[in-house]
Image (tube, rainbow, N blue to C red; front, side, top):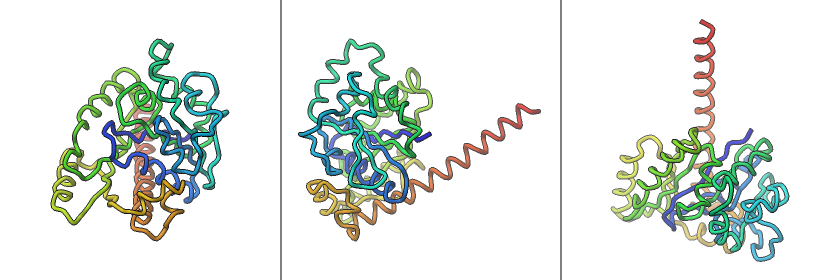
Length: 273
């Protein structure tokens, strides 16, 4: 059964959607079966993989409101092994419409359960807020990946996100964990970038990925062509860094699986004695 991961930071402009699209694409090109769920009303992940969000017949909006199954809203992308549940501006009204709905926090989790076994990873591009859509994403996820930009206000609001994760673990999703923290938009020409990196590593310790995504014009251009960076310009520094990140991401998955297997074996041995 696939692992579901929310890509989340309530602060805008952190490279959240860029990471969602490019991580999904790179893993797909590496042979993994990926589902990308666009849960951000801006629909940038949808257009970022070449889907016209203005002509959608069904989207994640219908999934949230229970009008369509997630299977009915799935679209194949031009990238082999990558499917998407797209989004458009209709999702803006979902939070208001769900206010009085039954089990409103678990709508997405329930929908994903019907397709989870079909994918290696399910990535949820969350909106830059801590509203009901993000809450649904976190409840539906096994872990959360936090992109943080290497800028002055980098940690602004992160403590609130960590508090929210704690509340969700206590009340709705006890197994939710932090997958990792990805540093983005680094400009190594400035001393500020180095200072921010040190501050974030001091705050999150070993949860910070070694790979750092730099500011790169090609990364900014790629979405306007409806392509991930690996297809738009595979030789750019942005593409190489996301390839590097995927290698680190998969290595961490392997290490976590080995650790999990060891713990499970230890528990069985304890029970046997």
